[in-house]
Length: 450
Ligand code: AMP
Image 1 (tube, rainbow, N blue to C red):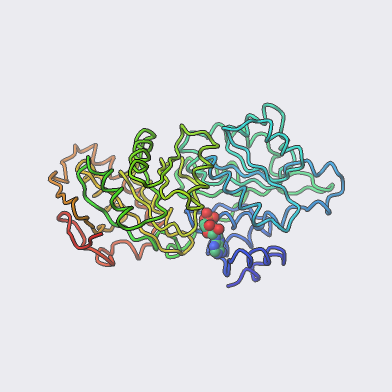
Image 2 (spheres, rainbow, N blue to C red):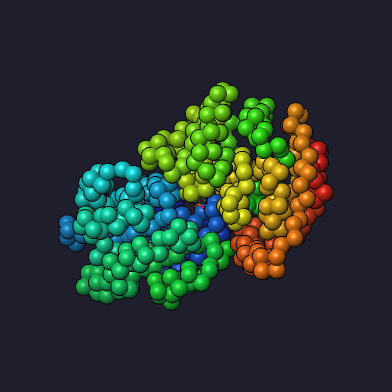
């Protein structure tokens, strides 16, 4: 299948060729034709599947360019609005629009907190027709009357589940109330507003939002085998919790890893890891909620350009990180929520590239590791490193009270659905297909050494 068969314009085909996109991904094949025809779409969206291009390419093609506008006034109106849960994701989408839209006159503006309103207002006024925004900052602009959303023709809610999880439902509802109701007048005729929603999970809250926001949407589901996490080789390393920092440093140095994304759960821990690595001559920076926007962008760019070897991130800050062919993701500790394990490892092995996700498991994390293994229906092979021999002693299964285990089973069921979506069913339940190491149900094995 080629991009040409998706009825994309020659301008876009030339750009895609320059970017080296030889064929569309599944979400692009399924979504682009629907969006070009103006349908509303509700789509499953996992990281690394190419969903940004899936909604940006048809948007660029469908929006009027400057020379097609009848009045100069039209130039100064936002015609497409994309809402994203984090600054990083908003900025990343904005950059993608600039890159995919290089041959167009469209102008995108990224609206997110942490930098002054004024500079964004200037960009809006200079003729932006596409806005990519986080909800809080967009509301600031709405309240300051520095943005006019009365002519928005296309609205996208990206990573909608994440936005709801972060408590943005009221903000979203407020913003949606400022948009033209499903139809709007364009050139004297009534046109339907096009609305799109991308989400990795579909809990009732998302379905309610979808119902109120989308009109006769077409649902797009992505086949499991095309999802990126299939390419990720997952391993675990048991380690005495006090030795995690030296182990991390040793692994990076001894293996000469040059681009490593390390996940941790707290800002404090992220900063501690960065200090430790820098003291050991491994250049590292952190991105987390306490860092200013400028610092976060600087760290991300330094990491992308390989000026630093390690980026240490908390889960929220890492949303939207898109680095092609990221070879190593390390869970310094397991995430607070088991589902985030899947989001984290999705940062490697993107767009059909292979990658490795390594989790450092201390004694207190053994029970959670078993839960994650149950979630992905896979026993993760263990690796070990000379000088860091460690055998966990804690009994893994603990007897739970009836209600506790019922609740847990419910959560597990939901998380499993997500895992199935993201990892491909045929990959699940297959406990004997690991390439390296030995399944570690009985404890760590020392099959693979660094
Ligand atoms: P996304 O899921 O939108 O974050 O995209 C993941 C990565 O895949 C990004 O780095 C894109 O630039 C890249 N990408 C998207 N579509 C394609 C394609 N058709 N061929 C190659 N790379 C792509």
